[in-house]
Length: 207
Image 1 (tube, helix red, strand yellow):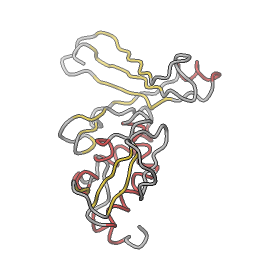
Image 2 (image 1 turned 180 degrees about the horizontal axis):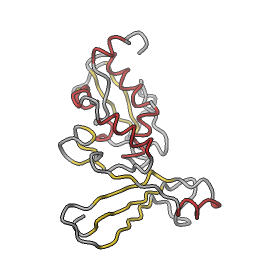
Image 3 (image 1 turned 90 degrees about the vertical axis):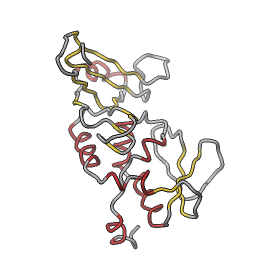
């Protein structure tokens, strides 16, 4: 960052069409012009780009939108917070940045990390570590597998809220920004915010 005024990172999914034919990889193309900066240079990223078909490849490569990642790096206690670094976001579009800004403004005391407990309880949701383009949390352990892992909560209300949150389109946008659309990593899930307890009580019956 000290030697590049602006670094752009174009991020590509591996499906439906691939950047490199026959290569089952997710590609990031990093571009920048060497230009020493007094401050840390900017890093700008695209959204997680998917090719719809072979016909739009040229257009997609030429019309990539980038947005600055400053303030949106995912940390242990949330977006733009403190603690260990988890992931930089793939933003690109205004609507993605809007969702991340909304989540960033949530209370870091109400993340899944803070609301879940380390010991086994009767209030649990299950996640599969590898989903490949979809997130499928479970209220019951529908099958036994190495990659199926539990989250325990102190109450049924909190467990059901976490289940709804991870099932939501907002979480999917968040996951595409910070994840790889395959792995549902523990750090990403635990940093996701939940509504305050009073809000949950107000909607207990619906939840």
